[in-house]
Length: 52
Image 1 (spheres, rainbow, N blue to C red):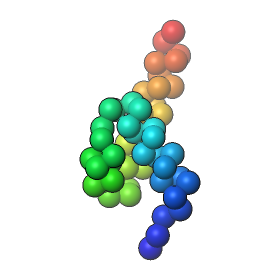
Image 2 (image 1 turned 180 degrees about the vertical axis):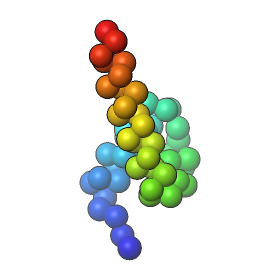
Image 3 (image 1 turned 30 degrees about the vertical axis):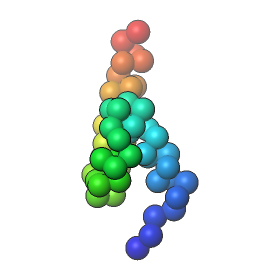
Image 4 (image 1 turned 90 degrees about the horizontal axis):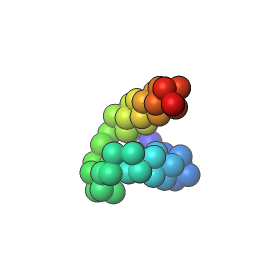
């Protein structure tokens, strides 16, 4: 199964921006793990925005 490059690049950028992980580290993740991290980052960002 292949994964569309647009969403993949968005996930990579999102995780890299927030966690400062390298491209290699992010690409080593399984797709479901990478999606889980993006979802958790979104929760943290939303929570932090509500606390401001």
